[in-house]
Length: 520
Image (tube, rainbow, N blue to C red):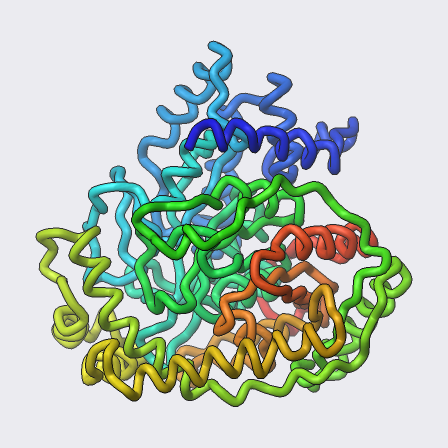
């Protein structure tokens, strides 16, 4: 593992070159700087891992715990200071672990860490659970020198408990608030990761996605998020919903930062055989946008004129930057949503039991039935706003040899791939498909639950294809993301497209922590 990580130090130097430190950049507070800038700071000795950690801790206290109180971090690493000191000592001794050496990284609280932090998916049912070992992606991050800063809040059980859930709420963590408008939702389920990065609590975070859980909160929180191809990042150690769709991915404030974290996360893993199918991942260097064919999926626009105007402006800018825009393309709206839902319910029951057996040995909860019973016994804490009907539906289903499951799996995969994205890519000879990632953030309402609006997450999620979202602008002070969806294993191409758009628009604006949407 280490030699591959050492080779990836090339990525750090090339990414840092994309954002060279100027006098102005060097004078900004550490928490405002990009990960690539901070990597250069650490390499030059201008900043230590301990100083960077202290800056993040101060920012967390001021913004997450006090002040706006966005409530994005569910737990801080109690060993972070000692680990930062050790990383500084290693650097002084000439020992560099990899491109993330000393950079703080936040993890969603459904990713196992074999340390003093808990892994709970936000549920009180798993409170106190300490995994026996790190998830594979965490092993890779530590090998690359990352300092695991803490765990982020999430939509409990990654939004797999109820159809009426409130995104960003968990029994253990409470509600995470949107840094752009505190009465608005962060979406989910990687709510805390999106909010924390937007609020500059850390330079990098890891989210996970089954359908929209990276790209939606990234779009709504005004940051960059990448859902990789299924199998590019090991699923080992991630509390599952669906082995057919689950993946972890990077979340950051710039495309270069996202690429830096992504490269460290990728790798084959004997505990996740699907990773053996992934081709070698070359180091990323930005490629020109000129001549790339981008298809516009108008069936996935929001129908809200101000939001869609932001995307129209983005399309015009892409054309000015040299892209060939194919508008519109034939990509039908999702017709396989019911089949996808069935697949997730069947796989959740089976996959969760396997995770609990591996990462929660001896815990009182060993299967979905145990979790259902816990929630009923602790309904006041766990179900004050919404119930667990998805848990109950999954529990009533059979195994993965059930004909209904196999039929649903085929229907959803055919709909997303051969009859969906693949057909569009082939018919129009496209490099990528673009559309609004989704609608702007909605008002949080735990009684009426979420109202998402438009979303472009499902085709790539069900197909297992990569999906990048990049900030495109604001609608009445609320962020909108532009999506780039590609064929399997085309992450580097998507990063280049997103990087060119980002540099050509500089659309991202920092959040203002407005208390009430009426004040925007």
